[in-house]
Image 1: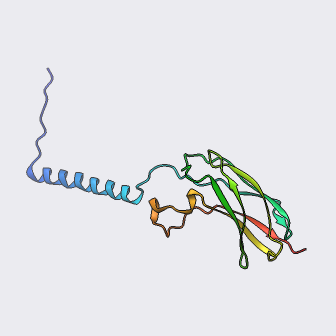
Image 2 (image 1 turned 90 degrees about the vertical axis):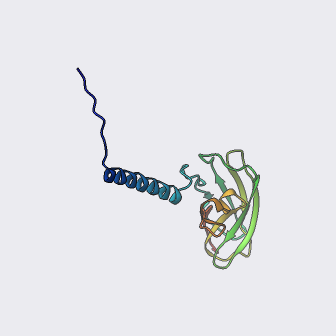
Image 3 (image 1 turned 30 degrees about the vertical axis):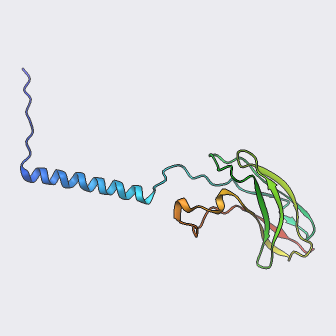
Length: 151
């Protein structure tokens, strides 16, 4: 013969149980507020720049592979900039593939200053990330390093 017993909580036990459940709910809500987007991060693949050293007036190939997530296809062209302490010049545009991939050859300006520089992609979905921290957020960098060698 099986007997079942109902567990009865005293009024103080019910209050403690309610407080415990309420605390757990608040903690879960706080965790969700800290990470409201539980989706995996979707950042661009490394930007490949070849060759890594180029003379002013020389050419480099810039490419990036497919991204591993769905991207906003509102952007069909990216703009490429050569940026350094002394330079900020648009060096070309490139058509973007369905999955974020692209490849192009750009010419380094003949008047580019010698030294370390970056080829920076602008016009991509990574430029603006308000869903995470507002328009002034530190979003994913989409650039590749290059050395301008004056010879």
